[in-house]
Length: 382
Image (cartoon, rainbow, N blue to C red):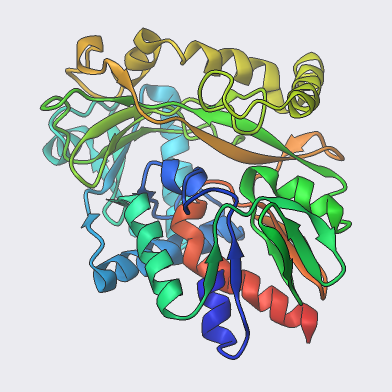
């Protein structure tokens, strides 16, 4: 967004406030780096349009800035006859959204990836790719600084002041405030009178990493997902370097930055999140009880490997001994409807804009989503 604001308003001062010592240390730097194609979502959703366009734009950005891209593609495989209707729905959505997507037989599936398992047929997405997300963030930071954008690190948000933002590094004047605080976006938004019906629910994503020399897959392999929730299930990911990961989980976290142990623990935040999750478990809103139990089981290495082994041959526990860096998904929950928010969501006025739900695949969508949000800002302040 800072990049887009600088491009549209070259005469304005743009400042990025970052609470950490560097950029991309949370969701942006901890995601899988997969550039999704845009066939999971209905064509009338923002996700569908931004994923399709973001895949192309971010691929072009990487090529222009020397950031490596692996154009490995993705197979979506059927684990049994019950998945065939889901494959048909994904194919229909991909075509409706103008996304290249091929229906392939079981034999063709194995020609694309010899180790893949599927029932009767599969889908192949040739435009799905992989990048190193930390390299993309580093490139954006370098580009912004060269363009005169100020990036203030070690400046945690402390509150709103008239015409300014209070931070741990001092007060920074701001004619317009953009809140893209991820896990903390709802808390910041409420200071400005927004996000009254919304709360962030944190979900922890864990990946197993293949031992060096193990894995050796040509392409990503995904299952047919449950389209009623925003999680894509355990899959096989090929990173930009050719390494292989299995995962992720979507385990309900007990505080917003619960990466490891009691790091970043805050008692008030813990009580708020656990109370809300306990209520969801008792009421079973959006199937939360089944989701929580299912995802907690995935924190066991053997169980997660067994789920991935349904997608491909030759996957064993000994090949996946170590967990990669965990990530936390900032998932928006609508208290008015009792459901997870499935699409992007923002609120704002002529003084501030608040990005409340930038859920996966927000990394893929980043460039067109930023342009859309700056359009919103320009309309609000006109």
